[in-house]
Image (cartoon, rainbow, N blue to C red; front, side, top):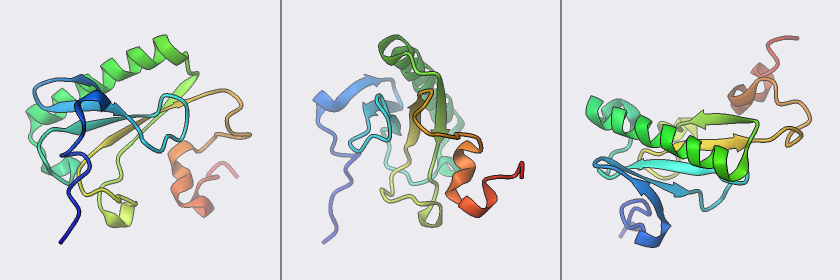
Length: 126
C-alpha cells in the first residue's frame, strides 16, 4: 500500500494562505529562512496538467507569499521553481512551486541560480 500524499493530508495549522484552488505552506525542509511552497488543492502531478484558472490562482498565491516574505524576512532575491517529473527531481508526485528567499552571502557566488541543477552547465559565462 502506498503512503498518502503529504500535500493532500496537510494539517490546517500548516496552511498560511489559501484561495479557491491552492494553499501556501512553509517548506518542511527549508533551503533558506522563509522557504515557501504553493500547492494546488487538487491532487495533480504537473504544472502542464492543471487548468489555466488553477495556474492563475497559484500565481496569485505566489505573489502574495512573496509580499509576506518581503515583510517578514526582507530577502535580497528569490528563486522560484517547480520540479516537474521524477527526472526533474520531483519526489512528491503532487505539483508544488518553491519560493525560496535568497540573502546576500548565503552562497559565495550565486550566479547561475537554478542552472546549478546540472553543475557542469551552470557557469555559462566562463
